Structure formats: structure tokens, C-alpha cells
Image (cartoon, rainbow, N blue to C red):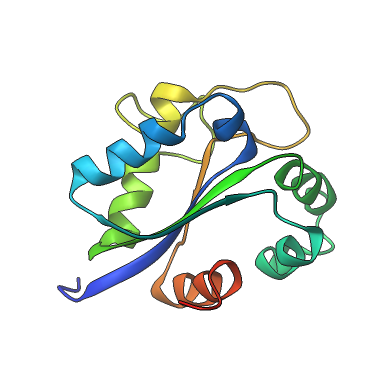
Length: 142
């Protein structure tokens, strides 16, 4: 356990943006007490997504995931706070929105849409190393 201030990348994915859930997600982040350090809204290009998802290249879900993530606008956010990586991942809930607990973003707002990839509203960095790498991809000037 660390008491050091961390930063994490949070993405409101195209499904969350399209459904108008960005404000709800940001509200939950701020209610939790994390600080929004940077925010941008845009449709990511395939090069950025290839860099972000490089560890998944060659896996069966890679191409559909890149297609999904480039299908519309995302809200990219850098958050900051004590243990915010772990905290946001708990706030987001399980990757599978059907299995995500009530009270979490995915548990309250997500569901299985029967698509080739899991449209699960948000992404959050899973470690300090991933956060540093991902923030560099999405916010290179930060």
C-alpha cells in the first residue's frame, strides 16, 4: 500500500460517451475525491489505439477492440489522488458489466450488448507503470 499521490488514465469509451455518461463518470470520480488534472474529448486514431493496446496485438479480440475504440469520441482524463489507480478500478467495477457489482460504474450503468467486444463504459490504468505509459500516449505534453 502506498500513500504517495498517483496519477491514472481514465477513458470514457465510445459507448459511455454516446450514452451521455461522461458527466456521471466524472461526477463519481470527483465525489470519490480525486482531482481531474487533464481532460480531452476526441475520436482516437488507430495509431494511438495500437500503441495503447500493443500488448494485445495478435489476440482474437484486438481488431474488434480497436474498431470499437475508434468508432466515436472518447473522454480521456488524467486523475490524481492517493491510491487513485486502485480506487478508480474499484469504482469502475468488474470488466464484465453483467458481473460488476451494483454501486460501481459498470454495475450501475453497463450491460452486455451482445457485441464482439465488451462495451463496458470506462478504462482505468491498472498499475503505476501502465498509468505512466498510457498518460504519455494520451497526453504527451503532460
